[in-house]
Structures are given as structure tokens and as C-alpha cells.
Image (cartoon, rainbow, N blue to C red; front, side, top):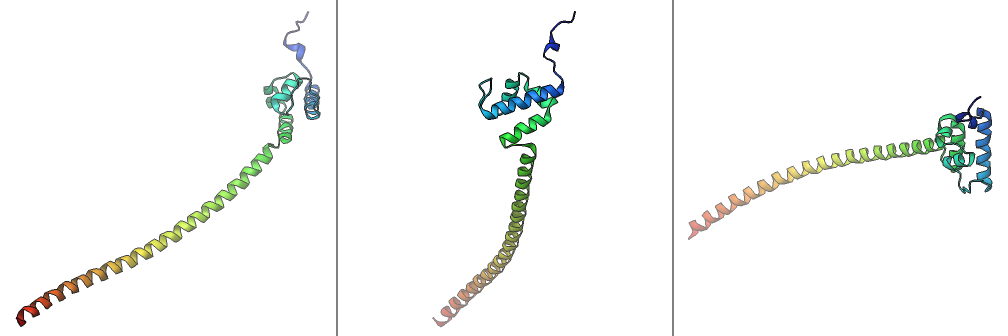
Length: 142
């Protein structure tokens, strides 16, 4: 005689998939036997009397259908992340361009500053020389 251990819950894959789809349908219609109210992989698993791992590992199409119902299908999430990546790359390119422009302005301002510092130094030197001459001229007159 065979024992009714693990093999008692065994169902063919097609039957198990139908059970999972019916569980999803019951959850969507608010007729769940498990009193679940939201469609999730865990809720479907409880409703169908299986583990979440079974859904993830053996019924990826069912898992994807559940994610689509939740509004977060793998494709949709991937597409949103791809669009976000494109937007961030555009922002990054704009920031790099702005940095380059600011570096060019800074170089120009630094150059102007050097010219002004040199002119200031020259004027101070002329002013010092002029004061010495004026003092010498004033001393000669007295």
C-alpha cells in the first residue's frame, strides 16, 4: 500500500495552474475562501493552498499575471526604470555641460583677475615712486 504523505497533494501542473487562476479570479471578485482582500502572490498561494515558492518557481506566468494585476509587472517596472535611466542620463549630460561652461567662465575670470592684479601692482608702484619724488621736491624748496 502507498502512503498518503506528500503525494496526496500532488496535482498535474495544468490542474494546479487552473487552481491558481481560479484563486486569482476569486480574489478579484471578492469571493475568496481565505478572506483575503488584495491580489498578491501570498494571497493567491493561501487561497489555492500552496506555497508562494511554488508559484515563483513553477508558475512564473501566474506570478507575472499577479504582478500585472498589482500594476507592477516585470516589463512595466523595467520600462519605467529604463525611462528613469534615460531621464537621469539627460540630466547628467546637462550638468556636465554646465560644469564645462562654468569652468570656462572661471578660467576667463581668473585671467581677468590676474590682469587686474598686475595693473593694481603697477599703479601702487607708480604711486610709491610719485610720493618719493614729491617729498624730494618739497624738501628742495624749503
